Amino acid sequence: MVSSEAVSSEMQQTTGGPGGGLTLEAVSVKYNATRAVDQVSLQVGGPGSQVLALLGPSGCGKSTLLRAVAGLEPLAGGRVLFDGVDLARVPTHRRQFGLVFQDGQLFPHRTVAGNIGYGLRAHGRGWGSAAKAARDERVEELLELVGLEGFGHRRVRELSGGQAQRVALARALAPRPRLLLLDEPLSALDRELRDRLTVDIARVLKVTGTPTLLVTHDHSEAAALADRIAVMQDGRIAQTSTPQELWRHPRDERVAAFLGYRLVLPGQVRAGVANCELGEMPLARPDGPVRLGLRPESLHAHADPTGSAEVLAVTVLPAEVRLLVRAGTAAAPISATAAASADLAVGDSVVLRLQPDKVGVLEPLEVVAGAIVRDGRLLLAQRQHPPELVGQWELPGGKLEPGETPAEGLARELHEELGVHVEVGPRVGVEVPLADGMVLRAYEVSLHGGVPEAREHSAVQWVDAQGLSEVRLVANDQVWIADLVAILGRARGQRVHR
Image (cartoon, rainbow, N blue to C red):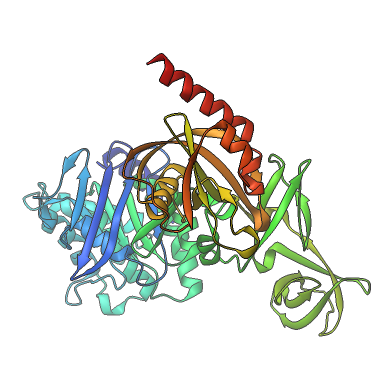
């Protein structure tokens, strides 16, 4: 436990807190030809962002990024700043950052107090020359802060794993660093100890107010410790959100899968109710397509002879029964849960019900189309696949990649499809719901460079308003004809005016 005296002392004396701030601007780190970190921009510190967790699987680049912040890895690009000051020429030992690694890296020949005191002397900032009494007082404050009162005389080898990590945390906090870096600090501990220590560390971080960058692959640890979580995949940040927003609204299916949503189903929202093939639930959002992410706890099963789902396997856990079921039209077995007292067996029929607070709601997959106008004419591209659309014309464009904005995705697609460079403008008309929870949107586009060529189509052509009414346009694009004619009219008027 952390005493009220220690809380008061630490909050009054710490130099970390809301005033401190780490900023990463397009940071990249390379190992030979491999980009371990690719164009990462983040902010740590300030209201609502005291603790930021880098969450991701092994090998995604999160520890490399932390080491780059510490000055232990050279940057291949971008900047690391603290309070607006570029740290490029500041060596690790002068950055005034505290580091805690997975194994703690304590000195086995020193006592607990000696390890914490070393953190003071090594950091400098006046502690090296401070009177021994002042250093001893600070060590005692830290021991109390991390719940190790009376352990100062102990040897490191006499400590448990959890106690050793508390000492490592105390050593890092001792000189009141302006940023704390935690690299998988609890991953070597067993689950029960990890859960207990997570609560204690969360309390310590709140007490000190030190801006903190945490690296972890553990979902629970990130959610318990962090104000915001940045999911990292393949060296890039896939999504940054509060823990609640992240689990409620994963950005895409890959993020959802990492968060435990094993199944993502397309659905439709009508009058505040979302429907998918496994059921319905209330959802306060506009009518239209939606994708629902399901974890085992997102579906609750009830025994019912008339149920359309069949139990394939039963695993009895202390708090619940975990089921594998096949549900009517579902293409593959899915997981669900039932009450621990449920008496279910393989072959039983069950009814599945969605648990709204445990369902992830993903935004529709966006497909973008570009309405390119030049000299009063509109650019169309001719389809060459699938077979039923061969010979029809459409506005060029395509699917967005994860993390792309419509402007970024459409500019990329038009460059890949047509070899042109464009600037994306305002939306055109209504959005068009597609199959599988996708939605199609069109945007006005200004042509800045290049000559359109049919790289991924059979042909391209420019048409005026009359030509637009005569071509065989794909059904999805037909809904915008009136808007496109109006755009052509504006463009023609602008040309005449000039």
